Image 1: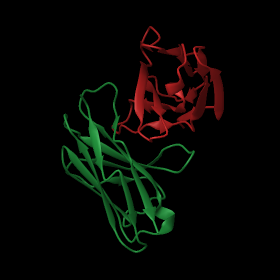
Image 2: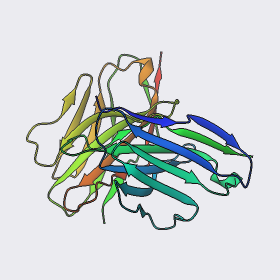
Image 3: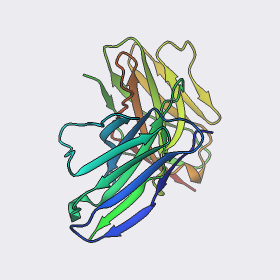
Image 4: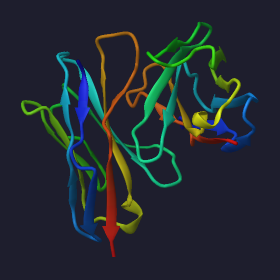
Length: 116
Length: 116
């Protein structure tokens, strides 16, 4: 149980375009979803926390107009990277948390974004 | 402020031997949880083991055990009988239960290489 999927697993896009990444909890209701960014050989950096039906809470230094997060249902959250630039190239990971789960966060497999 | 410290950027271990990955934490909250995750080169975050601050016994999950020393604020991961497939990045993380958010505080990680 507690499976989280991410789509796409990898994407290449041109500079200036927008990219949408989906995060789905497949077998539980995710009241909270987290979006992380990870550069090679580095730790996870939390970008934002989203609760179903409300606006996401962004971490300091993360541009909310650039990284649009929508958590419209208890099983789906999306991250849209708008007007992507090469410096946005990174590994993006989502995780989901439900009620009463002691292990707290279940992670998706990640999405590797390359902006050319 | 909450903090997780992993002082070993890289570790080597011989196959079939045991290895300890260090993790120290800092928090003023009495109620918290400690997590270890494994991240192989594929990028997915794999949950390994969890220790609650009030748990009386050290957590164990198969070949993984957590050496929890509360007074020293350390939560070292012990992997017994290392296997080649254990080669990966290992992250220690903490969550406090005082607030309403479910954010995890992450360490910088330890890269483990298992030699045949």
